Image (cartoon, rainbow, N blue to C red; front, top):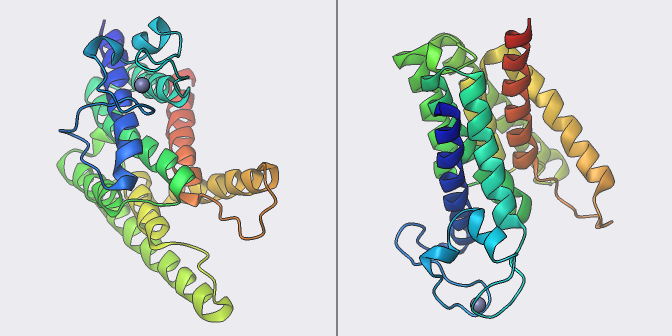
Length: 249
Ligand SMILES: [Zn+2]
């Protein structure tokens, strides 16, 4: 029953994530604007705005103007719901709740960075502040269960190191190898992971980034790797594999 509730709440968060992904990069309100059709801008009826079910019911065609609805909507909703569900199975309830919020923010970072190459500062600040505060309030809320010292030091050291790396590249090669958003995100994930796991995530995200670069569809020389997306995916994979191993061993 608890797992089912997490799944349903995950669907709702997924639906809100779709709103944020569309509107945040355009600087539009995410809370009070009514949902409109992506094509004809007609207001969407509540019965056509139910996560996942409405898409299935409409067979992916908008009711107002009979246009194909992007598959991205149900995919994001289902992904969020599955992440919430897995959290409720892998973690204790309070941990599952905390990690679901963190994964919600990460999913936004992953998708928005992928499409727009933007990582919003307020999301990074949220990760940094929540990562350190959880270690102060109750380290067990973080499945990685790290000390406040580990959390704070990893956050600061990773920030300083990558900030200098970014500045060095700019000075020597005159290129923006890393954005400031990437540097803050690295610090935020460091605050959640502690030093050891933080080193893992750098390797995993580099491999994901390089694979994506090699297998991307276009051959644009100025192509920028969405490193924030790679970091976000790596974080989720790492936390899951780590805790999955705990359960089976
Ligand atoms: Zn329409």
